[in-house]
Image 1 (cartoon, one colour):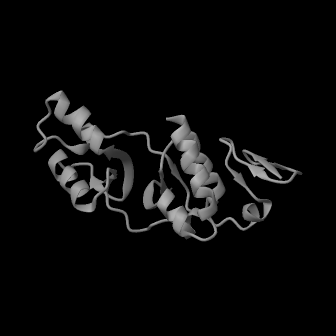
Image 2: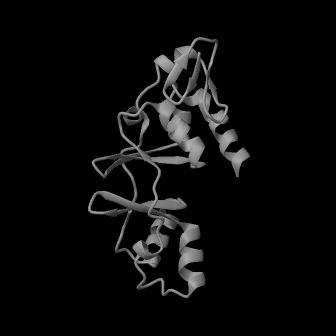
Length: 168
């Protein structure tokens, strides 16, 4: 079986856009993103200072945070954004809000998206995490680590990571 976008045709394997192979059995047993996502997400508020955001990243040993206004996902900020768009541009980290340097374009999917489609998005956008959003509200996040820990999806993780590394 070959899968390209939403079309399925006869054959021996499913092949995703970037070359990740999964068996036809895995396609039909593929869980939804809501089944593998982490629903407790550390996030920055759009009005948090760069200093507060950097400390949150340090304390939790993470390199990026979703940026929220209320529970609505507005962007993502990375440690690199803080350095390049903040400090290197001469912005004061104590009074510069994270919304001023965040990336507004966020790669996201619905909780009811199947893992196969979510993985395709991660591969095509070269990201290691996919924010799960419903009605603009952040519901959770799926990372390659989440996929690796799930017995139904762990087999595709190495191929996903290889595809992401090849493109960079």
